[in-house]
Structures are given as C-alpha cells and as structure tokens.
Image 1 (spheres, rainbow, N blue to C red):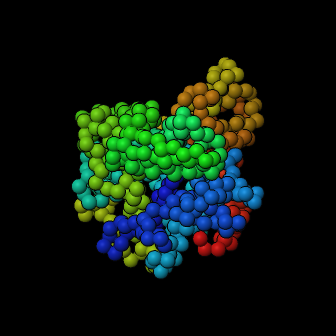
Image 2 (image 1 turned 120 degrees about the vertical axis):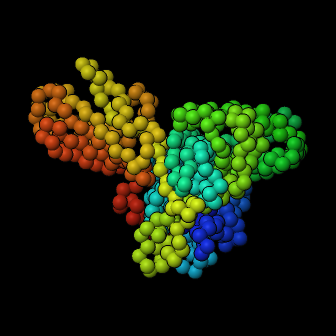
Length: 512
C-alpha cells in the first residue's frame, strides 16, 4: 500500500491490475479519511465521525497530530486522563486505513510506503516509522511528499523536463525541484516549513471572523473550546466557499448573541498575505538552490488541498510566468505516488505468498516503458560540533550538506585536543548553520580512544539511508580501525520496549 499520512486528511492507494495507481475508498465511501481520533470512553473512533465529535466533545478529540511527530513533550490526554504519544495517535489513523483497505481487498495488508513532508527531520521520520509499526505495518520506505506527487504526475509520461512541486497541505509546506527524464526522477533541491499549511490559513480566518463578531457586540468565540471548535468549522467552510466565489456570509452565535459576518475573498487574501509570502520565498529559494531560473523550469505541479486557494495559483503564475498544473486531484496525488513506489518495492522482493502488499501479482508501473528511478536529496544538513582551534568555543561543521543525494555517505577528519585524551565526544547535529545555537543536536556518544599525542586524527563518517535515517561511524586514522559506530536514536523516539508496549496497546483495541 501507499499511504499519505496527512495532518488533516489521509489516504491509502494501491496499484490495480492494470498497473494504474488508484486511491481506495474507506468504509464510508470516501477517498479521504480525516486524520482525527475521538475517544468515546477508551474506544477510539477515527475519521469523519471523529471530526463531527469535535464540537460536542472537544477535549476527547485529537487532531493535527502530524506536527507533533518526534516531539518528546507532546501528549494527548483524554478526559479520563489516559495519555497518548503522537506515534500512537498516528498509529490509530494508520490502523483505520489498514482495516479499510483489508475490507475492500479481502486480504491482509502488511507492508506500506508512508509519505512525510520533505522537511521532516530524523526524529519525525523515525516517529512515522514507529507509528506504522504500532499499527501493524512494516514501513518499507519513507517517501517525501513532493517526490511522491512528482512520481504520480509523471507516470503517464506526459510530464518531463524540469519541474517544481509546490505542496501546501493541511499542516505542512514543501517545495521540491526535480528533473524528470525517461523514468528518472532526480531531485535537485528541496525546502519547506513543517509548521505552515492550510491549518494556519484557517487560524487567520478564525481570528478575522472573531474580531468582527466581537466588534458587533458578541463575546469572543476563541475563549471557549466548544465555540472555538464551531468557529474552526465555519472558517474551514468559508475558506472552501471563497475558493469558488468572491464573497460569502458566515452566521455566528455564542451565549445568546447572533451575528452574520460578511466576508470577501479579498478580505481573506489580505489577512493571509504574509503566509502566502512565506511560501513564495521558500519556492524561490528552492529554484535558486537547484541552480535554476524560472526560465529553466518547464512546469509547476500542485499538491495538497490548500493549493486550491486562488491566491496560491495567482502568486505562482506571477513569480514564474507559468500556469500551475492543476490536472490532478491535489488531495490524492501524494498517495498515488506512494502506491507506485510500494508496487516497485513489492515486485523487487515478492515472496510469492500474495500477502506482502496485497499486490504481488501486479506488474510494476512504468514511465514510457521504463521502470521509474527515484533519486531524492537530504532535507537538512548533518554535521558535528567541534572546538575551534585554540579556544573553548564550539562550532558546527557540516559534513553532509542539505540537498545532497540519498543514500549519502560523507566523511570529515577531526583532531584530538589534548595529549593522551581518553575519549572523544561525537555530537551529531541537524542543520546548516555554523552557530551551535541554530542547529539541533540529534545524537551524542562518548567513544573511548587510544592514548595519542594532541592532534591525533579521527574520521567521522555520516550516512543517510533512503529513509533519511542517520548512521555514524568514527575511525581511528592512525590505527586504520573503527572505534565506534552508532545509529542516531533520539531520547524522544520510542525504544524497543516502548514500541512493543505501544503496539500491544493499539492492537488490543477493537476494530476502528
């Protein structure tokens, strides 16, 4: 299966018997499943019915959890006091998608390719894999969402050349520049913001509506969980309405006061101009980092439901001189790309039992008769904290620059500071700045080394796999021997025991 695990909606897809990726409808006949979990007592409910419960039971509804993936401090606590980590909430959404696919196909689903924002770091990627494991899925690959979209767009062979994917989803934003030629999908550069999406546009619209409601004499709708939940529903509906018409009216009520707020598309666009500018700046940065100008870009591809906003398409046309390609359903295109890669992996490793993916008898998709090849890049630089020569201050030395092809393996030599130094501290960072204050330490190990004179050379090798998971090796250059290896394991990610307990907890829950 290919799964788009979204902030607001998720989708599951497979490649059919004709070699075409298709989105599978859920048990309610919908191709999109709301990424919302409602806890009715201790029994979770996922999807549309959970979303409808937000107004009546706001304290028992978990939503927008994707933004918390990899965050060690985030917990959702039900009204009964039961805590859940973000991996567990996401696992419930994945469990629902898995169950719906199995109902439709009449076969077990065990393997999946799951998409993530290109700008997700290592902790969030690992958390996504953990969520799949908890849900009973083997996550064969983590695939960047813009790359998945490009793969789906390019399957018919009609999209080739240099393209820019602008992916504005419910909660995250990514831009990726790729070159597509004869089935080869080579990423040139990628950038994004994991905290920018349709959710943020909704928040601005909510504040605008609330200000007008208060100005008319009403109480603030943001002061109460229930009225805020109603306001969010109204704002989402108004945003969708203003996609097709220039003006609308929003009926609001609270504590006996009612008022209808007039709202125009121009009002919304003026309020959201700063957010739109952030997406523009990131888009132009990606074009620059890819070594391109807009004259060298053949097509702009759209992904993510928020790209339906007219201001997005006008902005892209204005800065690029190109009409964005809106030929695909932006809500489904990422899942279709994930399904394509899932089928490619299934045909590589099919064991013949027909259960690995539910698709083992289907031929791999091709582009103009050629098997697609995906060449992605790193979304963050990786480095190591080192002491500046002759000082006690540290700096970040980038070893693998951002936008390096993956899999990637780069090395750099560092030197000991003291005679007979007993150990070296290897502090691995995520980020591109030389200032340690502007990067994140993602892994740290103290490695014992032989006693050498000051200045002894040691080589640190960092490696990214295809999921952009990080591995570290430290080599004693003098002895030509490896003195330490480790995989980056964040304290905030689940360890083996925690993962097993979470998997048992979720598997014990009745079908969703």
